[in-house]
Length: 127
Image 1: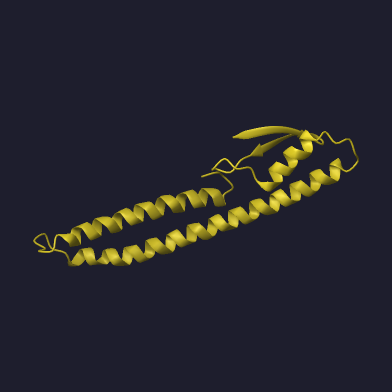
Image 2: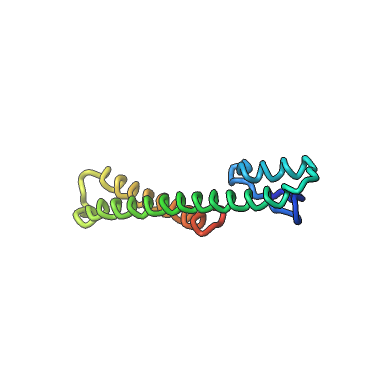
């Protein structure tokens, strides 16, 4: 959801979080815009909100990078466990071993999907 708000020098695009919530900066910007303040502090408020918004975005991107690295590390661990695939034979009496291997492949897929979304967030996009 995108909201267009007039505050200060021009229109400001306000992006919500993927779950529909607005950031604190965006809520403040919208509230100040709706208050129709007519004062000289508008420029300073805009600059402060821009700076806080940029810092918050940097923190979100850093958190996403941490998530992507965690998924990489999880995939490395699962790949080590998949090494047991070399020990399996077609006539393996314990068929549950094949289900466990299938589960490990699914884990890699899930971790990769989450890691890809985190990398997109780290790039500044919405995943």
